[in-house]
Image 1 (cartoon, rainbow, N blue to C red):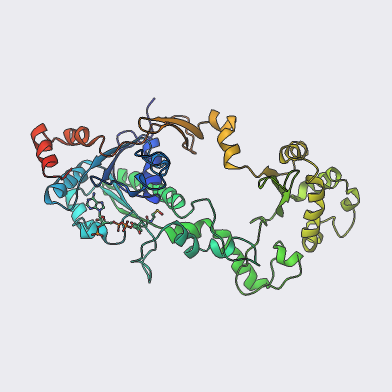
Image 2 (cartoon, rainbow, N blue to C red):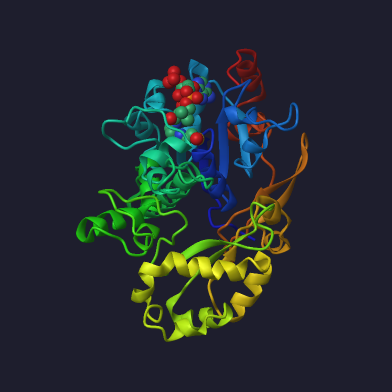
Length: 416
Ligand code: CAO
């Protein structure tokens, strides 16, 4: 079956996580992604967090499926020439080097346009234009600068980063959307354009509800659905950390389930959704709350939320998270188990949908990865293993028009 991005050729000049997540998605949609790496070491993540000696790390393999890899020293004149040929023959260049690196290499936006005016040049940087634009940035820096860390955790503890890689993978997702949108516009204009996603901006976009709350706080002085309100604590002038409170209009919290004393994930997320309040009261055996004016309406419940959750927890503690799920779901009460990575890896339904996929690799054997979370009916994703360093150098150079002798000379001069 054909793929949505068949015929789109991507010069993938990305490394580490943010850029590679973007180009991996584009490869899953059918683009021909040519990853350009330095000979010898390649993408630094090939060797980082290694679990199998001499095999590419899972860090690398899980971010670079369905791509081809060529080695190229783009600082040598002959390497620059190869890069120029690639630029002429590709539709998109994606990069996430430190600010200015591409320019220092000699490939400014103006030069790229000269070589290929149809080319879309897509970049991840830590920050957009402003005081920090020259800074190098990794995941957690973006989480901190984008507002996530200050609003994550409990207010009697320090700011917290989250395990979800919203700075890297979140930015890669945003960039992928920018790229396909720019390709769509190119259909009408015939021109490429620059696409920039700053990691700070992507994190802030994902933290949009917290900027909402900042303004609500400034208007009202309190936020009634925050645990601080229910606990009678004072609000300051900035959005506080809200623990496990829901970010939306339906109050929720994480509650202990049977086994919590020894199992760190024996918990359930419970939402006291207004339309099912009657069912909540019935399930936990507090029917009197259905009519009690202190509990009967969402507004009346706000100052008592933490007491309500503590009471529901007395009930959830009597059963496992899955038993609680089964009962609550019968009544349409929104809830979700806290799943460990072990449970997710073993979950058959995720394997069935291709969200968790087993991949075979010549050097490391079988491993699990996360497949394409975006399912398309006319562009199915087949996850294939990540390339070995330089595995496709000759194949790609031959396609670009290089002869056997030219390739041998480039190898001799350590350009590839
Ligand atoms: N041939 C020759 N040189 C190459 C090359 C190649 N194929 N590929 C890269 N290089 C060179 C670059 O041109 C650069 O050289 P200069 O410093 O002389 O300009 C050099 O390698 C190093 O690139 P870098 O500065 O991007 O790499 P780093 O390890 O020092 O920094 C990172 C890494 C991620 C902090 C930085 O790239 C960055 O801030 N990127 C933007 C934000 C980002 O994507 N962060 C997410 C990373 S994942 O957490």
